[in-house]
Amino acid sequence: MKKAFYLAVFAVLFFAASQEVSAQAAQDFTLVNQTGVSIYQLHVSPSDTKMWGDDVLASGVLNSGTQTGIVFSPANEVCLYDIKVTDKDGSSLYWTGVDLCKYAEITLYYDFDKAEGTATFK
Image (cartoon, rainbow, N blue to C red; front, side, top):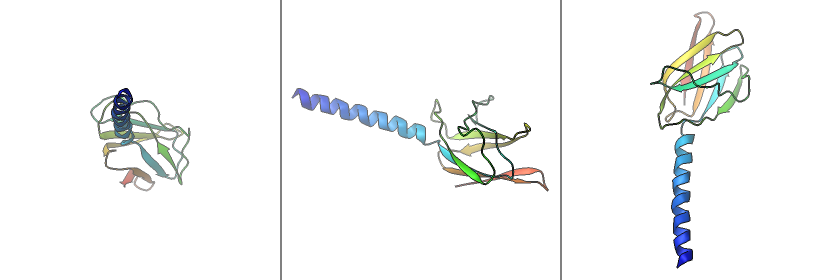
């Protein structure tokens, strides 16, 4: 009887932990850099905050033509995030209101003629 009780408790705890990990991982994404310049910093913050979070670019530098997985642990279950990328010279591009619960891949582009950044979301 005790064994069945402990198994039931373990199953409930395991299920709860897996749900929490799943919720946190929902905002992880792949970043593809097609800007023509290397990205030196990546900041991701909930859209409803006014401050940027830490640099989450684990690889240090994301060269143009490459991609990397972005894994971060948000403190809440927010889906809408603002994204800021910064190059070697300190110039930054911003995207606001990106739904990281909906999109798992973000490809960044830069049009040098128009001096503007764009992105596609999958």
